[in-house]
Image (cartoon, rainbow, N blue to C red; front, top):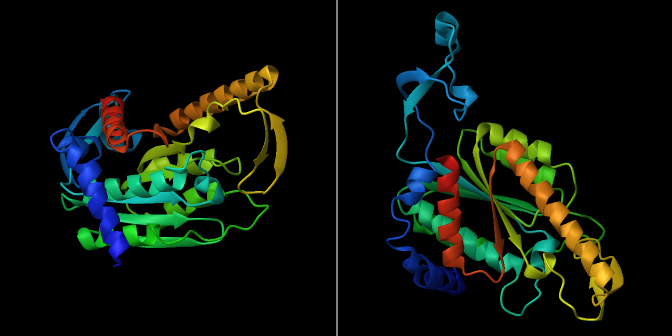
Length: 296
């Protein structure tokens, strides 16, 4: 692989992953686990149980719901579904854009998951181009993923928004057996992707990581500015100092956040939000701990 690829991986290992030593050891395995294959026992059903584990024969015989328990695999297969659309290339600061955070977060997650022998694959998605990296183990796989992420993204056709439903359907089609799927995106695109997310979550454990620039949550007071939609190219002039405009935007952001939260809950998906000004190591720790609390 290229020297730049190796440099990026080494920098992340030193600046981010080294700081996680002792804080996540053993944690992510208890949060994200492989699908079991060996039946061990039966027990009474509780509301937190997956209905797919109900043993219907025993339930019918005893007239009370029972679920099967399995021995968990030591290893798992993880997929990274990565949104590389035009809106992900937005940045309000000179340091880190959303695509930069996506790249570094993806490499760190892949490195964390693969260091115990887990297989990691990736889907790099844009309306114009999709690339599938089959799941494998080892450092060479992480270097390959890093190499692909450091390539310039494909030029997106103006006037088109991201087809998020198609991205999720591609993940469902690609990941055939039950596995762990991280979807990393800003979720800016066509509406109507909630059904595809629900279908993906029916078969797999899905972790949604939404990458957000701070100005997408609160527009700074910059006076009169021109705003351009990164995907459609549409431009509008807005007065960011107008209090009525700022209030309306704040209400719209609040409604969007609430709507996304409800969508994730309905789909049974673990959801996290990471901002581009957030420390990556702390974001990873928060992601694991939040997933742990949700599982409990």
